[in-house]
Length: 193
Image 1 (cartoon, helix red, strand yellow):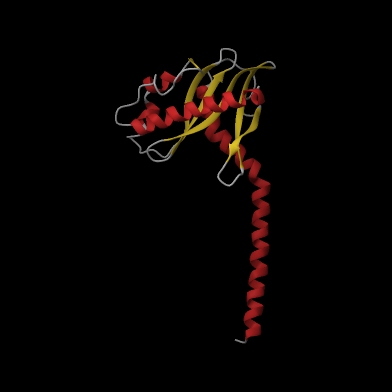
Image 2: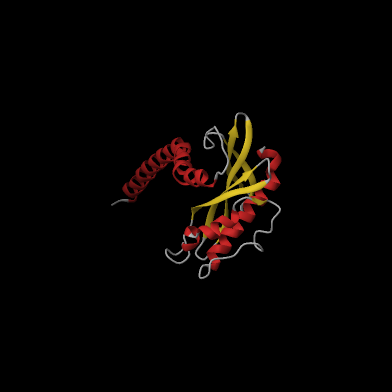
């Protein structure tokens, strides 16, 4: 092969990969909203429904807002969806997801806050990478999970909550997630409501 033929093959390969890379980027951009909606519908919605303890007459998934809660290490905004449960036009509860570090990674917790009484409604786990049968016993332990029901937001969630024996890291991950969610709500309350 001559250098000219090699250069032509390289040029053709670059053009073909550039075109396909551009097409894949366009497909990703076109489907990004649908993918996010499916994640919300299949992961966050069941947890939100489980955590909501008040009567509401709207679809909190459709009536959601996105707020910026800070920036990551690269300076990019960190956005979180906030789910609004309403009766008529009045917001009665707010749902949001927060994360705490468990034994094997982040534990995602959906928590709801009853706006009128300024208290935690309930919680439900959304995502985790905990060890099945060990760390996951926390999520099935109703006594542990019920400790987060109807608690004033001013509570000290780490001092008043009993952890599950044998799954302390996971229990603490849930507690940290709840505490972080309450901090996010308190800091961004004016934006949310």
